[in-house]
Image (tube, rainbow, N blue to C red):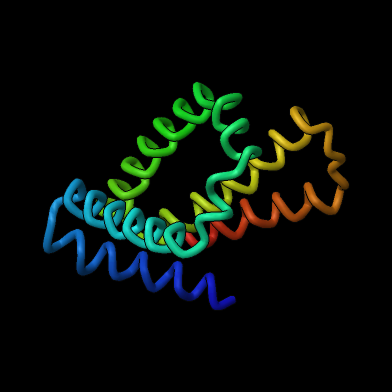
Length: 136
């Protein structure tokens, strides 16, 4: 619950304060720089968790797919920030969350052979109806 509040508060600040004072690109550069600085500080303290045989082997084995996923993820982050800047949060966030649930469920069923129960389908349909009513 605290995570949801922090997420909503940061979205509100991003849309109504930061993105009104600077470009989307500057916000993304600054945000990424702060994240990188925090990670560097963390790994300077806990460096044993970073340089391990398993991690080095894992990076070698997954380098190309990881680069592709990082590029796609960065482009998606840019798109999401653009949508935050240009769309009402009360419409964007519920729709985004609903589609995350729908696509995650579909991928889980078809790619991971997860089972879906009728109650799960009913929950998704309830989510769709709630989003419809929010956007009236």
